[in-house]
Image 1 (cartoon, rainbow, N blue to C red):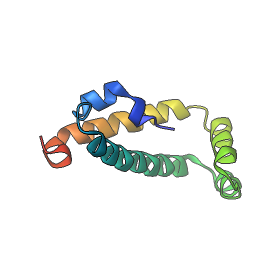
Image 2: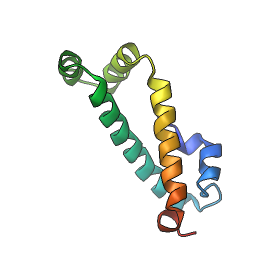
Image 3: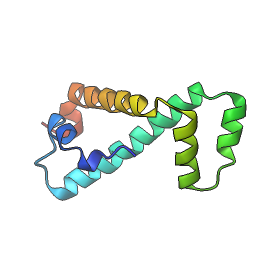
Image 4: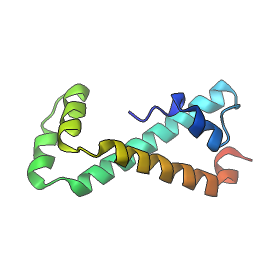
Length: 100
């Protein structure tokens, strides 16, 4: 959903575009997980109890993705916000994150 591995601009901005593939994959996996958690938090803040109950009844990833696209029309802007926040967090703490 976030496509971090394919986002060359993002990888360059946080300084890992030229890292070894192993290092890059490790960092990307952690970032994808964090982005997913941030998305769940943001969505849970926006859903009504009825929507949250309906969403919790879904049984597979495709159903969940379709439901989110239908019920959260500004999903792309939420994802962009999450990615920008993550980039800013990483750049702010770059020394601790990527050792540079």
